[in-house]
Length: 188
Image (cartoon, rainbow, N blue to C red; front, side, top):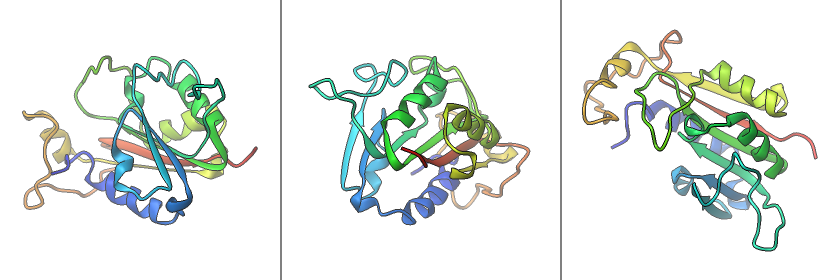
């Protein structure tokens, strides 16, 4: 059962991904497993601490930079000490026309794994992507949340599982719980 915090994000992301030719894409995921639900041409996970996206682009055993058609980061950027550097490294690893999908929390409890450093709204996430070098018109960013979901985030166990009968999924733009974006590298 998904967390109430991710239901709308996952639905929107499935719609965005359906617009892409995933079967022809080489995909990388940074410290996660969200991408396993899609039929990419190839899929590789890079886990921290062996692979630290803040330290630089991921390299092959022969010392060449790894490149991908799509890179995913689901609920990771809030744990990074240097999210701007990490975003620049992702952009460098994308092939021309490639995509970066990122999802982050906004209003959820502190959760150190191993650290908890940042929060972004959709606008803040878009600004981070622009500052790292993505073109503004090549970024889609959304956010979702409401007071009901925020209240549920105080419950234990956390995160709260979605209950279709009792949970309100209406969006209150003034009360974001999470944000996500899909940015395309539009240059070589």
